[in-house]
Image 1 (cartoon, one colour):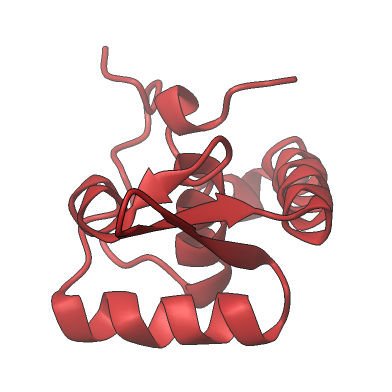
Image 2: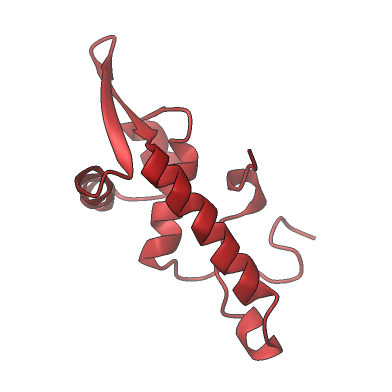
Length: 112
């Protein structure tokens, strides 16, 4: 059994799922390349998502040792918590919805 339980990972991730992944990766701070590889995004996709999350104050950019670090803001952590709650509600909902629910894998959904 894989980390997705009995269901395979989603074939296509939606935008909210990807934003949740990025926020989880950047929870304690991460470099651009770390986010790109761990979230499995192209360079262009990464830049688009970083631009959006920075503009909406879900992420902040911190310059450290001549490198840009990205860290989830309080607003970003709040988004992440609410995203998890909604995903859980949908996952525990009707059987017809269960196969369509996309939540980040458990290794990205650290609690606390």
